[in-house]
Amino acid sequence: MKEIIVEVGMQYTRTALVEDKELVEFYVEENKQQSVVGNIYKGLIQKVIPGLGAAFIDVGEEKNAYLSLAEQPPVFWDSGISPSTLKGGQGVTVQAIKEGTEVKGITVTTHISLPGKFFVLLSDRGDIHVSKKIKEESERQRLIQIAQKYKKENHGVIIRTEAKERTEEELRRDYLSLQKKWEDILKRQAYAMPKTLIHQEFSSGLKNAREFFTEEVDAYKINNQKLYEQVRDFVSKFSPPLVHKVQYTEKDLFREYGLELKVIKALKPKVWLKSGGTLFIEETEALTVIDVNSGKFIGKKNVEDTIVQTNLEAVEEIAKQVRLRNLSGIIIIDFIDMEKKIHQEHIFNALKKAFEKDRVPTYVLGMTSLGLVEMTRKKMRNSLQLQLLQPCSHCYGGKQYGKAFLIPKIEKEILSIINNTSAKEILLEGSEEIIHAFEPYKKKFLKPLQFQKNPYVSSLGYKVSPLFSFNEDKMIDK
Image (cartoon, rainbow, N blue to C red; front, side):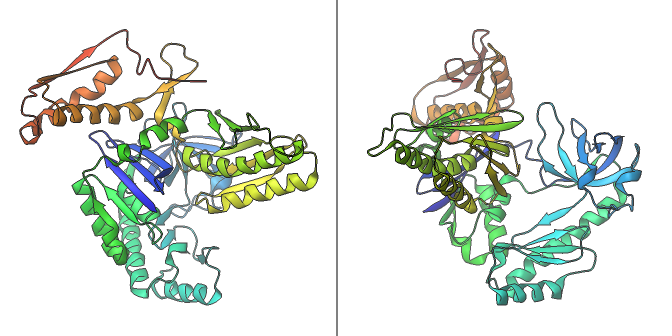
């Protein structure tokens, strides 16, 4: 059973993709600061560095955005400027394709794309492309003919996998919706001042409905009435047969499914295999390394069979962990050494097959002379570790849980006390950072008290303790 679970809190929205109550993907987004990927900006070029083949653009965000000139078209669609003639002070329309980090700004492109449920509109190409996952030639031709009927000359089109076997009316609604959105963007782009956001991507709740909510999903469960209605409206417009699967719930499904503990496990570097073997996953800024060890597994036959069996088990777990942790960029896998070439090829082919299910573009490149497997995975958003952890405030070498992890847990604990105890006062004691994060929400906790089960709580106090780290007693083991 596949489910999408969305939990909206006062400060953060958490999304879990669950298969048979097992966590397979997890995302968290601050309500006031949603992901910038997909946003379209009218930027102002600050400087061009030919030696790096890059331009840095002010798009109104905290740091200048990075534009790789080698990956851009010969002529920009909005201005007619070519990458080779770019200079500071020029305006350019760009779209965010990668989140920034603490030290880097967002990555942008001039290839503008607008994703819908069944189509993607492209700014600088006039042709029609069909998803490779749609194999039947008759269906491909049917979809191309429908797209040609509604397509205008000023953009190209990608027909998504989800368009397969959809009625022309469903496809028409999605296409016309994208065309209207594109026309609105062109109008804003023509008159907007530089350093302006001219199109904002969907919030996580609606983006999930567009990207993840297919016929294979059994339920889309949401704990927020407003978002529930928004998702129902979106689904009823583009996928009417799925509307009944959108459900409003007041249950704490994160606790019921044990998702909190599964997220904690996904943040630890060591992963146990069922046989007793282990994976050790280490993220660095440049790449991610995954080391496979036999651990406690001793096998029942010869050494080579034991190694192959451990490596095969590791293949399936690596595919799960890469998806759950949202690992991206260069990934190096050190399998246990195998003597026979046929066994190496068997593991390599098994790894390629395991990643065929991954919706994020992933490429298994090959095995080096040292027996290391190289692969790459496109970065769509920050990894789970970057989303939920922060540098340790004591040792400055390890990691500890950050605000995106702790605040939803503390918020739920406060509401649990309000609803399930007769406490008259609640005191939250913690670091200055976490107290500062909660202070603006004090009234929101107390405002609905007359409607809660506990009529006794009259105050919520905060106390900053210099002895508290952000989560002193639950550091992440290195």
